[in-house]
Image (cartoon, rainbow, N blue to C red; front, side):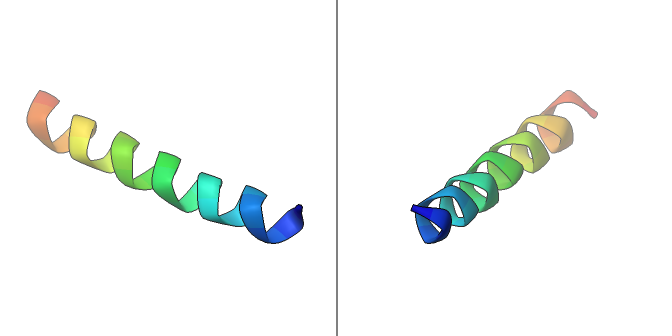
Length: 24
């Protein structure tokens, strides 16, 4: 359960990073 949450957080962080780069 915890491992899944961490993995999800990492994926979510990458998505935010990519979106931020495209926005800027």
